[in-house]
Length: 82
Image (cartoon, rainbow, N blue to C red; front, side, top):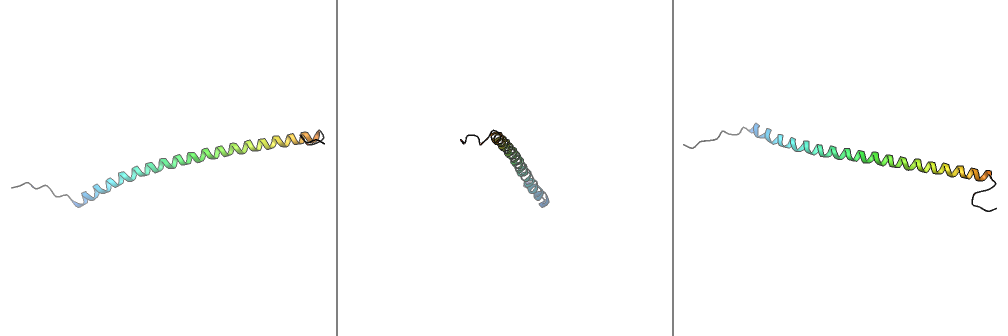
């Protein structure tokens, strides 16, 4: 008489399938989370770079304004012959 294996319970099969999907979902979520973290860091870096550029432009504008005011006190626009 041949030996018969025990039948697989449908619930056990379903549980095994769902467990596999859960692992894949967790891995996908981890990759997506890492990508979102990198994107946020790139956004912060871009924001800092833009802030630095704005501050440099404002400092340059202030310097030009001060130079123009100094030239006006000396009797005319700088670099413009009377």
